[in-house]
Length: 432
Image (cartoon, helix red, strand yellow):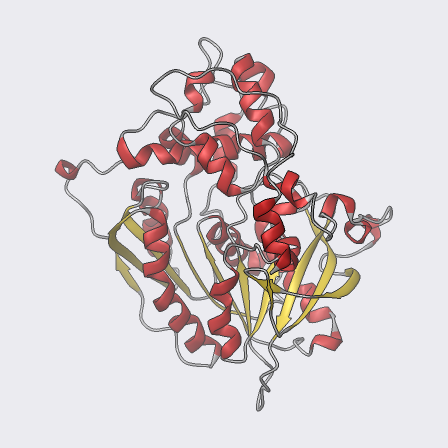
C-alpha cells in the first residue's frame, strides 16, 4: 500500500515540463499536469529507464524471436497491496515494425491453485497501455500496484489459469502498430521456453480491450504466418480501432459533446507513430510551435494524463497552414499499413464493440468486421447497445471472461455470429 500512497502524495515538488501555450476559450483549460513517470521516479522501485534489467544486449540480433534474455521474480501488487501469486518476468527478443530485433518484457503470473489433468491454461492479458513512457508498462506497474486493469485478471487466477501480461508496445512505447502482435506472440514463445513455468504445452487465449484489444487481435491475425508454434485457442477483444485512416479522420477534428474526448487519441497516436515513422509523422513539418510544445509534453505520459490533457483539444487546430494528415506525404499510407485486416485470424474470435463508443465509433470498425465475416473468419461479433467507451468495456467483460474460460477448458467456441446493428443514417452516428 505504501507504494500506491507514495504515488498519490508525491505530486508536490515534481518539476514542471515546458509550459503549455495559452488556449482558446473553447478548448480544454485543464492546468498542465505532472507526468506519471515524474511521480514514479520518486518511488523506491526503479523505473525501466533506470533499471539495468531491461537493457538490450549488444548482440540482440543473435537471439531468435521469443528467446529469453534474462529473468527475475518480482512482487505483484494490486492497488498497492501485495498479491499472493508467483510472478516471473522474462526479458525476450522480438521484432519491431521493420523486423529489426528488439527486447521487451512480459510478466507471467501463476496462482497457487493446483491444476491437474492437463497443462495449466494461459490467458494472455493485453492491458490498454496507451502510453508514451516505459514506466507505464505493466511489467513496472504490476510492481508498484498501479496497473489500471490488474483487478480484471483475478477472476481467471481464481480458476487456476496462469496469466501472461506483455509489454507489447515495447520499451519505446509505440502504439497501434503491427509489431504489437509480434511482441504478444513472442512473449508467449518466451513463456513456453521457460521450463520452470510448466506452461510449454498450455492452451492459450488472448484478451484485451481498447489499446489492449489492438495487441490481441494483431497477434491473432499474425499467428499463422509469424508464430504457428503458439497454441492459440481463441481471442476475445473489443473497443479497438480497425481502420486507422478512418479513426484519424474522426479524432483529428473538434467533436461535439462526449465525443470531444476522442481528441486525445490523435495526440497519443501522433506521439507514438512519430517514433516508428519520424520522417512521416514529422512534428516540425506538420505542427505549429504551440502544437510541438503540447506534443513534447505528451511524449512522456501514461494514458490518464494524456487523456485529460488532450481531450477537447483537436490536433487539427495546431497544424501548419495548409497542412493536414491526409495531404502530408506518407501519412495515409502508414495508417493503412498499420490497420487491421491484413490477415484473417485462423482461430476463433469473440469481438464486441459499443454502438455509441465516443472514442472509436462503429464506422471505423464495421467495414473490417464485414471483411472478416465475408472471408470466413471464425467470428462472434456483438454490438453492445450502450454509450461510452469504458461503460462498454465493463459490459463486454463478463461474456468475454465466460467465453475464454470455456474455450480454455476445451468447450466449442460456439456458432459464428454477426450482430452488428446496421443503424439508419437518420441516427447520425458519430464518425459514420
